[in-house]
Amino acid sequence: MKKFLALFLVSILMLTACSSGSDEKDESKGKKDSNEVTIWAWDPNFNIKALEIAKEAYQKENTDVKINIIENAQDDIIQKLNTSLSSGTTKGLPNIVLIEDYRAQSFLQAYPDSFHEITGSFKTEDFAPYKMLPTSIDGKNYGLPFDTGVTGLYVRTDYLEEAGYTVDDFKDADWDKYIEIGKKVKEATGKDMLTLDPNDLGQIRMMIQSSGSWYLQEDGVTPNLADNEALKKAFEVYKELNNAEIVKPVSDWSQFLAAFNSGDVASVPTGNWITPSIKAEASQSGNWAVVPFPKLPGIEGSVNASNLGGSSWYVLDVDGKDDAVDFLSKTFGSNADLYQELVKEIGAIGSYIPAAEGEAYKAADEFFGGQTIISDFSTWTEQIPQVNYGLHTYAIEDILVVEMQNYLNGADLDEVLANAQKQAETQVK
Image 1 (cartoon, rainbow, N blue to C red):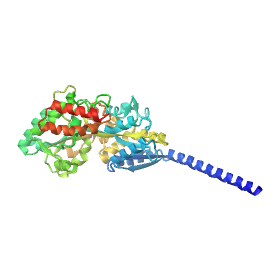
Image 2: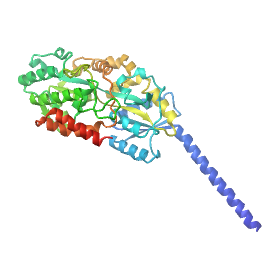
Image 3: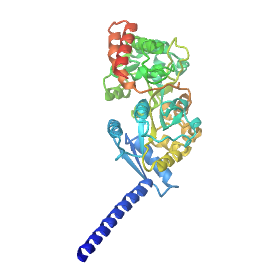
Image 4: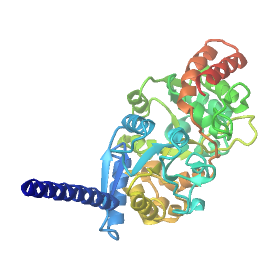
């Protein structure tokens, strides 16, 4: 009996020790996690490189925090977040994740308790105003703005000159003026003015945001198609571009790049992130300039500035969130010198306004004839109209892609947009 009792007590002690060891292991794991920050992003040459530069800057003063940077394809990040958050688990998720601005609200509203509020960790007035709505809920900040998708109109100055124009002819230009110039350029050079991909309505997105409008009403949920004057005008301009026979059709990214690198088009209206691709054709150095994006004609309040793309950083509400916020606050949230490095190393233009005073932002670019394009883009960034991208940008565009083809093939525009409205009200709820 004594032997049995002794064995029993030993067993209890062993179990207690194991249990204690397990607790200590979990606790130490928690402590370890608190000194590690894991970040998910896509694009090794842009976002990942930006993180590596930010990591180096941060760890000069914060050597006790380990920064883990993990590259995933954007679609994989979206899938992993949705799978984990919808099941209520955060295991395996990062501390910080990069989310495209067009998709941010769908995550913030679908999983309201999964993201950590970062209000007060950065000065909102230091960032482009248009970035605030997509990254916030009820006035509370959840995303720290990163790059801007500010648009410009890249133009071939040599082609313009052949047609009797200069960049000054694009001052305060609208799309009617653009088409007028495009016809003359086509006549003089035989070159189309731009590319359009029938399955990608980025052109429409840029046009309507330049007028402070979007596919959804200000609540970010209710479809805004049938009575959207800016959208109607954008459709009309899109058709006029095609009817003017100044469009080179493309069907994928490689064809898009080839069109301007080979000299087949005279302009590229798009986001500033295309700059490295434009400059990839060194033989064209000195023959390009960037002018403000055309505004929509006849739409009150339309401006010569818009946006295409862009993303922001979000902190998951998991262990290590304080270190994650600290990392963002001291890097992308306040470090103007970091943004100079981002411009020099990868051509990334942040939405951090104070960075525009740095030397890298003011530098002339000889490829663009000595133009200070980064400074110009920064100025235009502050002029981008603020809109609520809401929850359904891409779902609605899937509808509009089909309806656009119906319109181009002769359908009445009011009926086209009314049909799109009905479909959107049924499909996106």
